[in-house]
Image (cartoon, rainbow, N blue to C red):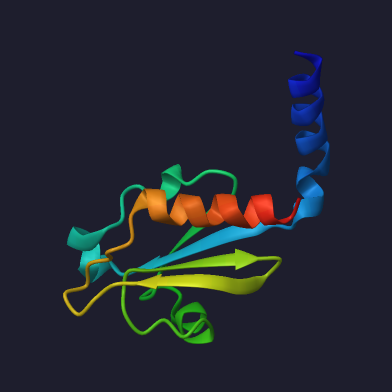
Length: 109
């Protein structure tokens, strides 16, 4: 029992040292039917939702050419990108993206 408590404490203490993981989710008002509703449920990361119609400069900065697009950043650098297909639907699942985020966290140990 003490070993698992120590492991949790070590993780909590070292978590800020692992590097910040951010997820930027780009979509557009006109593409609301293809909204990725589960993006807010991703854990162990900060999620920012952006509308390319309201923030075109950020869409351009991150080279978003199709919506929805989900970009995972670690320490401010793009680590992985998930984009919609030609029908404006994203194939990536919540589990797939969460697994990737979990791998980033675990790779820091």
